[in-house]
Image (tube, rainbow, N blue to C red; front, side):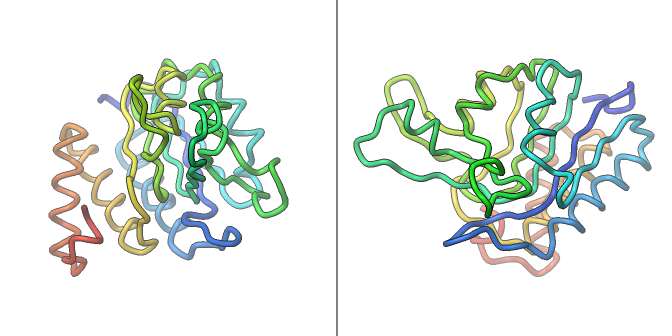
Length: 209
């Protein structure tokens, strides 16, 4: 990927994993600031960074029909498994949390909403959050956030099938973008980042698998 040719980049941080509510995560802001600085140092010319209350559902949905080619979202991911539910229900219950998520649906973006967007210019979406790769498995594939972004036209997705740790994920993402900026492929950058994460002290498989 050549990110130097007037690349549009959207970076968002507010929260990451979920319980009864959406707690603030200490490392997401540092994560996106580090990524922002890496991209700036590599002469990426157009970077949009949204944090705190600016990282809203409205701002995200307005990316439809844009020329953004890299999208990094550091937040809470939620998959509410509806036993016996339909594919449509799974799409409605696969969520990303944006600013105001604790106040109601105005802060939550569903896979169904993402599926209606046009993100065909987007080469890579990184969902730095929990369980973003989960969904209802059917004969037609997995219905969840990954289906939403694929329907939106995104070329490549980096997602998680389980809960992720706030601190180690921030470190992993920093290493991942370092690899991308050095010209590694997306797969090579991820494998290298996992190796670097282990070398930095997060050597238990739960941190990097």
